[in-house]
Image 1: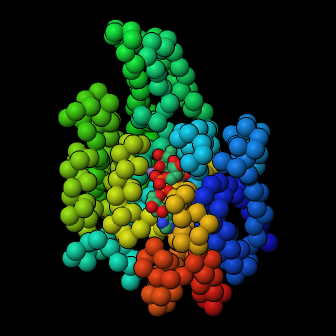
Image 2 (image 1 turned 60 degrees about the vertical axis):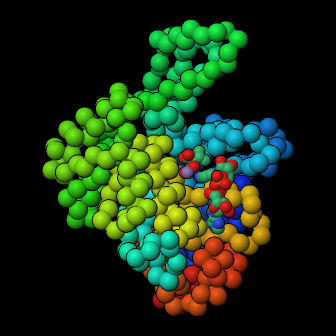
Length: 374
Ligand code: NAD
Ligand code: IPM
Ligand code: MN
């Protein structure tokens, strides 16, 4: 019997609530499909930080390396200044394992109310570049010396002393550098092309903003054009602002949307809104080494611990994880159980986020019960 060691990071807020349910569903799928899971739970997050001062030690990253995959809840807490935990745990993990693909499928679901007026169907995957752009952490305050190494496992970049700002020395300022490299754009574009091919699509859409941010997104467009033409896929260039407008009006014509890091973050939350809720939006952070699976949403401190959190995004992220582990049948079973639950269970037994009355754990139980009956 195959055993998978899976690193579990429930994290903060509703991260803990939804991961309990994802774990429950994975356990059920494992016993139905004849494999087992050895969970390695990591305590990192706000509670651990406030108690010990530790954010995410290097030993933990080394231990994660012994896992087949990571399943994560969410990171972030109002008691800790923004960025300390998000950068120190979540982004650290994405960068350390060079998880350059952030895959964010967004589709409409049966019986889930959406803001789409004409009831269109939507079946989109955002392919978000995950290791560059404004996220590289090259930020500088006032008259700091500019020399910084991008905290990137492979490859590592050092940007050095090329910038000087001459201003009124009493005036505060901040500068943040965004990075796009040929290698970074090439590999994510190639991934998007392969995904398009798997979906039997001949085109990908690239969201940029080269009309305002010329060098950064100009390079994106140049390299993406080269790579897509090599791959025999056509490339449609759109400005991200116009894309958001079109998506909000009618997302039905879109398939694979390739985005630089920050735009991908924003576009995926917009699409989550169109599917009917963040609690339905899963994601996969994929690299050549260890990959990490997590819902698109955050720790939602406003509803943490109340039973109002929708765990379906975490459960669907676990399905993406099972697919990645090549437990394809189990992965399909989890996804189909979610669809069947939404299709067949009365609205009242749906998550509160979707207009029902079921608590977080009742939703997990319902999905698990369907897998058991399959
Ligand atoms: P959020 O995604 O946590 O919440 C946005 C809104 O959506 C809130 O009203 C919340 O109640 C609701 N919501 C989110 N997920 C839900 C679910 N599963 N079920 C029902 N409702 C849900 O975004 P935010 O409020 O901007 O961020 C809160 C914290 O989470 C911050 O600290 C932020 O940095 C962090 N964050 C972490 C991640 C991550 O770890 N991947 C992602 C986004 C935000
Ligand atoms: C996400 C989150 C993170 C991001 C934050 C918490 C750093 O919003 O996973 O979408 O910006 O990538
Ligand atoms: Mn986000």
